[in-house]
Image 1 (cartoon, rainbow, N blue to C red):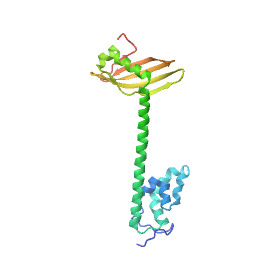
Image 2: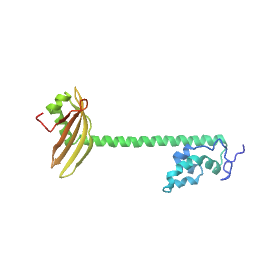
Image 3: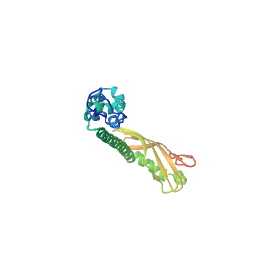
Image 4: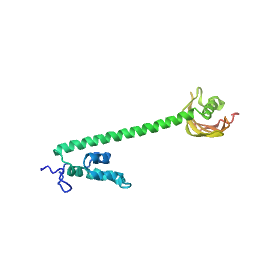
Length: 207
């Protein structure tokens, strides 16, 4: 077949290359610059950029063939494969970075919560409460908390949930606390035993 590449918008496109283009889909405007396809710059137009990756995926191979001179079909396909691999690599790297950032943020928030006096007060309460010790067994260990807390110059509040485990059973602590001045008070601290569903109010010391 005659090499029709680079002959403009009406040039014939070999059927073996007129197929979905992953490089154009994943790298869109960057791919467009590298393949003499200025229509890819529509990625910078609001709303149009929502559909443009799919348009490039479908039409990209034909546009690249018509707008740029290629040595052969084999050379064209080899180049487009490289674009696809680069696109895939950047996609995987981006997902990894975002996931790592979310994990780091989650860990940092959990670490900050674990260093609050409200959390330490809760761990101390469950570790020394007779009913909790009887249900869980010793020693009692606690996980990092999840939830929320706010602290300012005049006070603060915290709502935490964290897992606890002893030599007998495991459970979950539900904690609500308020800070007045520099002192924290446990407004609610409840232990739910996993296996039995028993709920123990750890603000009651007469259990």
